[in-house]
Length: 170
Image (cartoon, rainbow, N blue to C red; front, side, top):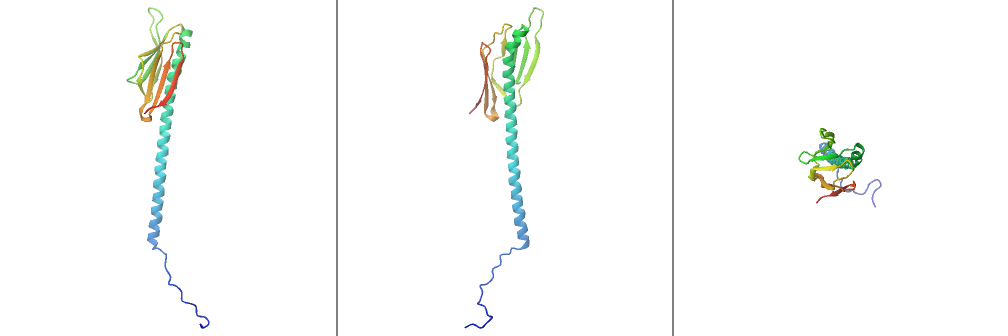
């Protein structure tokens, strides 16, 4: 029998306490890692927003060209003079001008459309034209955004129908 007040021997104590400097270093390392992850996520988010904004600008420019070509027929009939959309593929510029009516008349530049940087004209005729009676030239044009792998195909028909398609490129 054990005498009263004496306890059984206990297992030796193991200390789980880390030195004070090591705790601060671990917390600092964890904080730095969290900051690095947050900065990288922020950069990825910014890049995605920039890509979305660029693609939206490209879509708006392609729609602007298509809308201009759609309106050409109606304007030619209303003004009783032909319209011509000249295409400068090297500089990415479209010039909409009215064709001269009489002998001493001159062509008048009515609108200039500049494509945003990164959107290129890959295939296009030198010009789209509309006669004063509304007759339209059938043609096809392709605008390409190589960095986003996008192709905008614009086709016109003799009856004035204008179609714009966006396709991924490979």
